[in-house]
Image 1 (tube, protein in one colour):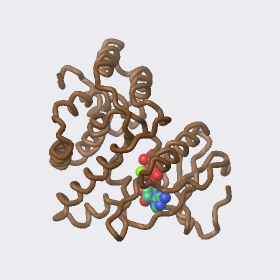
Image 2: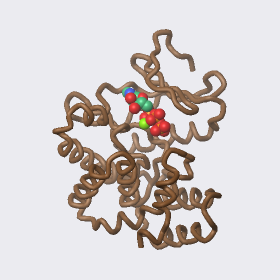
Image 3: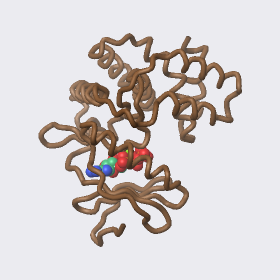
Length: 252
Ligand SMILES: Nc1ncnc2c1ncn2[C@@H]1O[C@H](COP(=O)(O)OP(=O)(O)OP(=O)(O)O)[C@@H](O)[C@H]1O
Ligand SMILES: [Mg+2]
């Protein structure tokens, strides 16, 4: 893959740079990112796209410099996170649309996506900074959860939703997508909101549970598991909070 001369950097963090190349967007990683992870994100994106979810079309995956990169169609629009910051009086409306979008995604199935349960179990087992006893508790909890096969984004938050001029939305960033139980995905979104704004997190959960006719307690039961998954992603920023969310006793 080659980058166009007039490319512009959208974001640079960790092991990646995202480039605006006019009609396309290129997400490029350095050599520390395994090729299999890039191929997995591209495959997840393609699976949800083919299932009918509004996501950017994949155009190419190949080596770029020392690492690997994926190219997608550039979608027009404004990130929902930006709109929320610019128009705080419209927060309730934005969250309502966000919930509707998540429910729409979860109404789709993609039988070849990785299984959420397997992914969570792998992530829990990879954690060396929690005791074997806590890992066992988490795995037992996971084992008792309802198994479903709905598309779950895995990192559904307003920075991954692009709002178009006609009000339609495109969802980005499918690296963590699985087929699984919607309530687990809701727990992840709730936790991500709560890092920044507990009140917004509660508003979101209230709206989701109302629309989906789902008991909040079901979502709460997933919290230690999604906190463990987030911790396994190695995000140091919220480590302390995540360790306390993992403390199973707190959520029983
Ligand atoms: N197809 C696209 N069309 C328009 N903008 C895009 C597209 N893909 C990415 N972007 C822009 O680039 C930003 C970063 O992209 P993306 O969300 O895929 O990566 P990321 O947030 O860095 O990934 P991760 O959350 O996995 O660390 C988005 O917030 C969006 O502004
Ligand atoms: Mg993103």
